[in-house]
Image 1 (cartoon, helix red, strand yellow):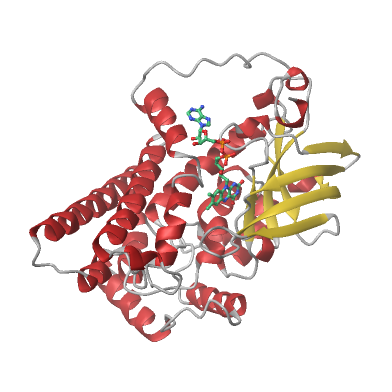
Image 2: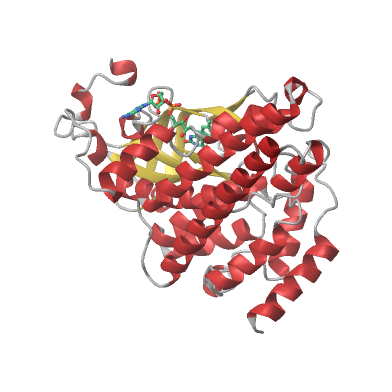
Length: 388
Ligand SMILES: Cc1cc2nc3c(=O)[nH]c(=O)nc-3n(C[C@H](O)[C@H](O)[C@H](O)COP(=O)(O)OP(=O)(O)OC[C@H]3O[C@@H](n4cnc5c(N)ncnc54)[C@H](O)[C@@H]3O)c2cc1C
């Protein structure tokens, strides 16, 4: 099938199968899982992933063609976005064949939901300072500690967990990555409400949670390099909207915003044009990164530039909507209020704008890196978290 036919088939399938609206309150998870299974059966889940692991074995061109069609719909895929964009690609890149066999197909079919357990109360931007411990006990590991801001953990079946396995070495050298069963009796998940009124992220506590060694991802004490793989995928997937389910119902998108404002006003027109230019520039930058990936050039730290551009675009969009529509835009029942309240989170989740700028300065532009006093200090001697 050529690309034009592929896109036509995707459009027809979406018209037939995409939900007409996304009832978030009732049976949302069951409906989302049912949709993912149908998406997979139709060949539109894991478009670029290898067929051996449940994917479709196609190229970025098909992925983009499908994404372009999906933009006109509102797909209930948010709850799978961590698995599809971050943890799944990490298992694909760094897992064992047994892990790929066990985890990837159920993820693509929406049978299992994933979360990412990196941030802690004392370790966000400096995530390598984390304190959750994993101690080896024969062919198992025993985990104790706390994570925070864990998106969708309250629905998750599996979590990708970064934990400290050695305190005698510097902080980046004593971490190991695991897959943890979120239904283990020692796992406690407590939802946290954000200012939009929703509880999408959580605190997660681990009390003597055991993990079999076969669920370790990568070598012992090499978790930092696995985490870097996840974070690169995270920034690319956030900026390109993997699993985010289209823009149709975004009331701050250009199409919706122009129906709410007076487009004969030159100032309003200027601002809408600016929004269009920024959105288009980001879409083209993402397209370029995707094409380079396909040609074997990994975008690396430039993924941080894409994530930064998306965060700035999201804030610009929310600010513009508030400015043009007026103060009523922030009232709880206004369609724009949720977009406005969640916009600042985009400048934090997946790494803050300041950290993205540090990465771009250091690794893309070649500017001098931040001074690091703790590079060669054993973790146990650092004043971080509860050690401070
Ligand atoms: C919506 C949302 C979803 C999230 N989902 C997840 C998830 O699923 N899993 C997960 O593990 N985490 C998740 N997070 C956590 C997120 O990764 C952290 O919030 C983020 O890394 C920042 O860490 P922090 O909140 O501890 O802030 P801090 O690191 O304490 O930063 C505080 C401020 O200091 C600035 N700062 C810190 N260090 C530097 C520096 N070196 N140079 C310049 N400025 C600096 C920061 O930019 C920020 O403005 C999520 C967060 C949000 C908002």
